[in-house]
Amino acid sequence: MVHTDYELVVFDGDETLVDGDIIHALGAHAGVGDEIERIQERVWQDDLEPMEALSEHIFPLFEGLTIQEIEDVVQSLPFAPGATDVGRHVSCQTAIFTALTPLARHVAAELDMEYYRANEPVIDDGALTGELRGDIVERGKGPVLDDLVASLGIDHDQVIAVGDGPQDRPLFTRAGFSIGIDPKPAVRDVPDVVVSERNLYSAAPHLAEKGVLDLGELNE
Image (cartoon, rainbow, N blue to C red):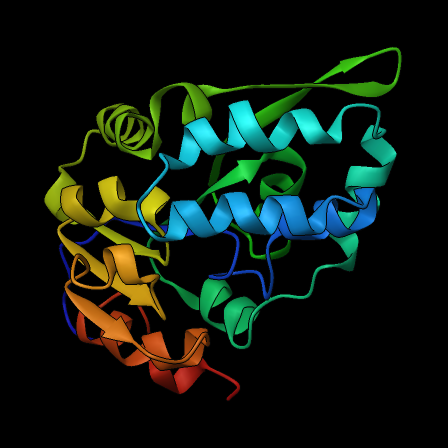
């Protein structure tokens, strides 16, 4: 494996490491899928700020769901092709930045990731209130990355970002190298490289080129 100065790979969760979207899945479960689809389409077209959409327009629709229902939906979501293989074999530290803590915690545990950052649903008497709290929804992924980089004593140039949506734009622009996984139109021109398949194996050669992955270790 080539020498590398990269110390951290940060992955998005939905439609990057996970083959699907936790918000879409919760919407289908709650019977509000069509409404969420309309809201998220505005986000993908860069017509609505991602975190505003999540906290102000989408998450209130989940009021009354239980935390167990969220956990059940999380468990039902499959990993994207290659996610577990590539994720577990990255040689430097890894992190997931995604919408909800239950999903982030699950993915981080399965992929042996060192860090996760996400938002916590507010629970009252066992059910969601429709509110969402956390650094990502309140500040965006960029400042959250800034904090993690500072705590690790590394530079942004030593970070690789992997994602797909407008919410990942601050990661793409801050990281030393970025990979778009079949990115949404609003951010297709932002990452350093783009792979057209929603498949982590397609990103593996780029990670190997940067010295954080040994292709010979993969099970593909």
